[in-house]
Length: 151
Image (cartoon, rainbow, N blue to C red; front, side, top):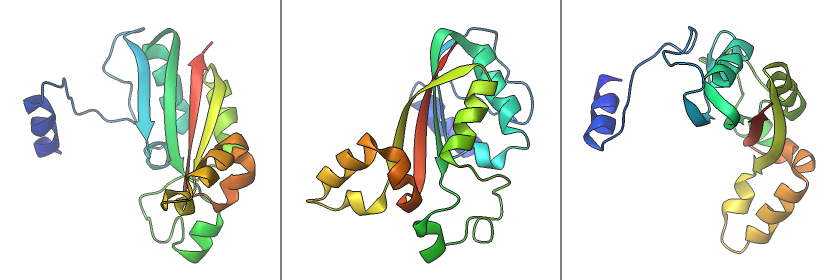
């Protein structure tokens, strides 16, 4: 972790180490956007972390959350969500994460799904289709993204 922080700082980034199971070390309303990729499934209380994101976001700020899809064809065929990833504490469905965002004071405004098949050349049209009706494609995705707006 120390090396990653050093690399970030060498690139001019203000990188810090923090325990996401504790209060974030930032003042209220410090940021316009919070980006959280493949992290919520590892913390003890995803709802408390989302509330911390709300606290540190400016009014009308955005939170961008990505989580792996717990129950999908990808997980059945390729790996097992908890067995093959022992650091996963929680799993999320689209509805569950949207509800958590709402409880933390966000309004979900956009949903995207990551369907591995759509990464193949010539199948970009399928990616566009998947993200027009993401809930339908979430069952074959390996992850999904939700953008929420602070209310």
